[in-house]
Image (cartoon, rainbow, N blue to C red; front, side):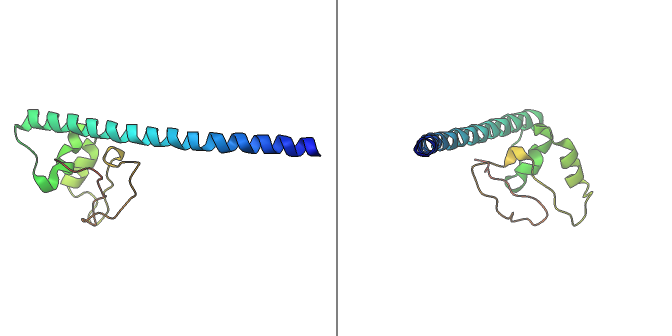
Length: 117
């Protein structure tokens, strides 16, 4: 019985050391994903500027960049109002996994975690 308690204590101690390390790894993965999203949006912005030779409108940059970040069907649906009164989701590229979700200022369009600076 004592041996069983010792084994359970050792397993509990090892789990106590392992779980914080796993949480740290998860946080690093989320941070890397956020950095990658920003890079991809910057590349989409550069492609937009090369194609149009102008910056997108400040309030509409997220919609303007959709065709340049491989989201043309969503951009076309929003442009043609395919889902009148419906809610258009933002692509995962515009959501940082380290931030909590929040309601968009525009009820028909999902939120975006990044700002055009």
